[in-house]
Image (cartoon, rainbow, N blue to C red):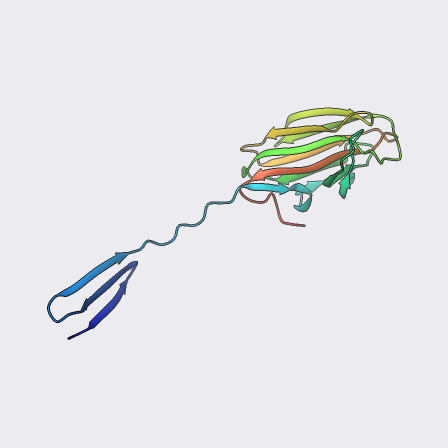
Length: 182
């Protein structure tokens, strides 16, 4: 009884040939193709943990913040404390993101309790949406379609003696992160 098996790999094909019994040769060709790259994993990315490409002096990342009359704190948030339009950050989304989700309003722990803050979301250089809030307002949830947007900017404006502005848990839904991790 003869038992001969020959294995030959050619490119992406595998040829197995052999004689298992003394009578008939057997041959089998197995073909494999190279593994395709995995598609990008879409997920929510926390903007406060990714480096902005541009920013003003008035935005400060805070571990959590309570907004207006809301009781629940928002983790990974931004406080706008400058009394001008210096409160902004811009991220490079490079067309990889489809949604922005954020809560806006006044910082409930702000030493000042007056004023109305303005919150502007810019998609590239165009204004996507604007909201206003006072310290007596509940947090406002804002969700914006940012498909095909290259640069996303969060801008807030407050008077010098007004309560600080708050961006609660700003995040984007993307196929890749909106910048390097900070």
